[in-house]
Structure formats: structure tokens, C-alpha cells
Image (cartoon, rainbow, N blue to C red):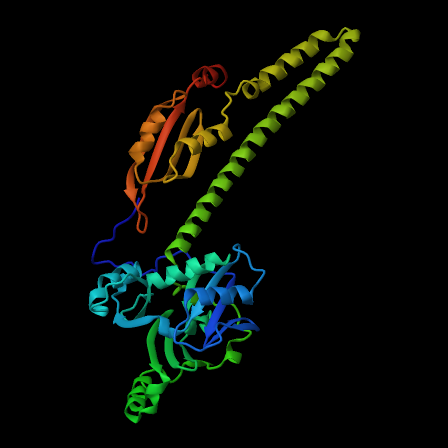
Length: 422
């Protein structure tokens, strides 16, 4: 059950969001693509922005043996992104993206193309920067990397790659042959973002305005200067703070969601297999024990002690009867049939079977369709909705809960015979 707080109380605890991470981080600096000490030239000629295909082909040349199992983060120059400055209320810490998205027409007037948004809120009404990236650019990069057999799972603004792990005020001076970017990071958010062309700095009036803007930056913060290719070589993996501002291409997000669902399905099968193994082990142990008693009985028949042993065998058989006559529930078969009946647009997140009653929950665009499908199955009955459908933030599918009863399992007779109340 979700608790709703009264308006006069504000939950300032930051909502936990799923952390994005990568195995490899590639950095674009000037005409060069770098990974640790390695680098290659993207093209032979210098240009403003590189195409998705040029970047993907350069990545393949740089890492010729890389497979799609490794997740790649691509750190692009600041000129690829748009930064807008604003103040967020304390309540926006729950979902800053939703709050900022509603302000997009005012922050970026006249922009009609679809944009991806990356923003964080500190929980205090302080200055923060929202970063924007065209969704078309992100998708082109994902598809281009896919064409060369690489998995691009996120895109990072280059200056953020050097953010520290500790929560402290930190500044970055990121410079290449055409641009300069200054950022200030404090309270786990980007508070200031200043990006300019080098050619503009040749004008005294512009340089004066730039100096005035930089004077608002903190004088006590640690400063990291990244001004050349050599300064990017040997860089460690980005900290989790950098990945909070990661942009995830739509198809990359879809692939990661599918991978998470497959992992859960594998875990369910392993759990079901373990349950069956325990049950079979109990049966084998009981059978082995019974066989030993029967062998002992046969050996002692010659000694006229058959009566006490028969009584002992009868007691053992009575003891293991609840195990031997336990109604068989083929969990693997049930899971396979559910997998075959449920449409690919739906999936199960939890599964429970007890006394012939199967209960499961999951997500589906049309839970009523699942009930109709299960009702038509001749081997089950009593198909019921166990919880009301509900929607969750960020998901188009509805959460549901369904239960049904397996036919031909004589649970009442079994319980009455072995577990009736005395």
C-alpha cells in the first residue's frame, strides 16, 4: 500500500532510483576517441560534430575484440548537450524529471523535437542544472553501435566523467580545441554549467562577461582541469555520481528491461527446481529407509521375530505416508504452460503454489485478457483476480494479481486423512 503524505508534510528523503552503470567508458576529445591509455582518431579531418557511424566505427577499431556483453558509456563533448538553470522546490526530489519536463516550454521556447532529460534535485531549494540531449541523436548512436556489434547503454556529458565519489563541492574545467566548459557540482547536483566557444574569448567584452560569470563560482572548491588528450588517458571508471546524469537511449532501456525480466524468470526456474529436488530427496530418503527395514525384516524372519518387525514396518509406512501420498504439483509444467499462454506483452514477477492454489502477480497491458485465457484452460478452475490492477510511474503496463485452482488434486481428502484436527 502506498502512503500519501498530507500536503503540509514533505518527504525530503531522496527516492531511490535504479543506478545505471557500464563496463567501459569511451571519451570523445577533439578528433580522438579514448579508452584508458588507448586512443584512435575518429576521422582524418577535424569537424564540428561526428556522425553516429563515425563514432561507432572508431569504437570498433579501438576495441576490436569487444562483444555486446560489455556495456559501453560514451562521454560526448559539452556542445552535444543543452543546459538550463533553474531552482527546484524541495518536493521535486521525488521526481525531478517530471517537474522539469513540465517546464520545458518555458526553459526551451520554440523547441519541438523530442529531447531526453537528465536532472537531479538536492532536496533543498538551490540552483540546479537540467541537461538535455536530442532523443534522435541518442537513438542514432545506439543503432550505429549495434551495427558494429557493440552495446551502447548510456551517454554521459564529458565533464562529468571526473566527478568524485565523495559528496563535496567540486569544479571541472573541460577544454578541447574549440570549446571550454566550466561546471560546479555541489550537494550531488550540478549547480552551475558554463559553456563557451574559444573563438569568442578573443573578444575583450566577451572575456569580461565570462570572468564576471566565473566569479559566482565557489573559490574554495577543488578544481579538476581536463585540457588535453593526455589528461584523459588513464582515467578511472566514472563514479556513480556521474551516472546519475546518464542519458539512456530508448532501445538500450528496452534491452536492459528485457534482460532484467529474463533474469527473474531464470531465478524462478532455479527456485522451482530446488523445491522439486528437495521433494524428490525426501522421497528417496524415505524409500531408502523403508528398503533397509524390509531387508532387516527378511533377515530376521528365520529367528521367529517377525511380529515386532511387522509392527515397526507398519509404523514407518504410516510415518512416511504423508510424503508418499502428497498430491503431485508439477511446478515446471505449470510455469511452462503459463509461459505459453501469457502473451509476450505481459510478464510475471512473483509466483506461489500452495495446496493446489496458484497465485502470481505481474504486469500486463490488459489483465482481463489473461483471466479470459486462463478460464478457457480445462485443467484449472476458480480463476480470480486477487488484487486490483494499478499503474506504476514510468510503466505503461498495469500491475495485476491472479489466482486459480488446479483440478484433479485431491487436497481435501489428503488433508482429512493425514492432517485432520483431533
